[in-house]
Image (cartoon, rainbow, N blue to C red; front, side, top):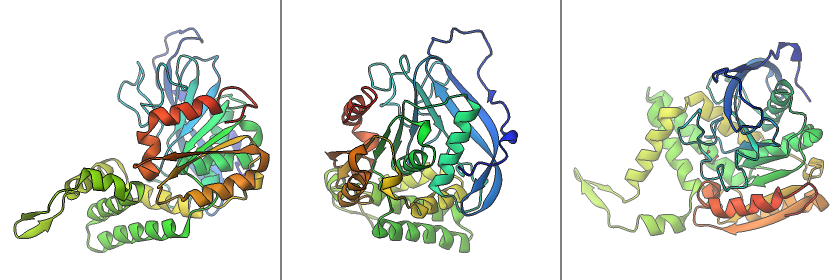
Length: 344
Ligand SMILES: N[C@@H](CCO)C(=O)O
């Protein structure tokens, strides 16, 4: 573990009203934690970890981490009622029911755009270990990671093995596929081109639009956008353009450019020897994922040996299936989290 100077990790500051509440009542709280981390490629940086915890104080804790756009607000609660990025996976009747499980999530380091340095997914794992220390959570019932979160979970399992009972890694392999890395590099070039034109936001929007084509599939586009093009002011406009424009604008509105660049690079810095992931791990692959091919996830599971279990979904949503196929993902989580030592 490369966390340094833990003395700077002060007591967490909670944002919720300080009314006395029985520990067993489901509730949500947010906090911020300053921490000094030795980043793998960039030396020591003092960062602020922002987290949200939902569920009864005496329940087992599951850490939830999503793609590069995910954040600490996984699901709506009484205290924080806006929809979260995993709203359909966390709630009454789900495996991650905040009446029975405490769900912990955080903003990835770099997500606020203030860290302009290479960020390894292993750095995120070290930040999570520091957060667990500060919150006095010795061990997670499970770490559930999707996309970038799956990479972070692999490093947590390898570097802080005692911190988790099991890992569920959805749509994230032991390495970035070279074709996916090339795709991301071009997205970053789109941002750089925008910056050269003093049009950084347009560059970021274009990068996100390219990214959307890698998150989804030709199958989905064939269903949704099978319409003739329009002529608008003498130019051809194809059926998917409104959708792509909206996706770009939505992303630009909530994402600092530096955050996108550094988190995108972070995916490409990921490398791990599967044999070092020494906890029971359920790997979920999506057939048709254009970023994380099934073959790489088979290699990951083979490398995990007896710790590894593979589940395969077929979905027209490709890499984003974890955001859309929530009933099927919930069923996989139910099996994976059933009890310690069970297999999926
Ligand atoms: N589309 C998801 C997955 C990619 O990481 C996201 O932006 O978070």
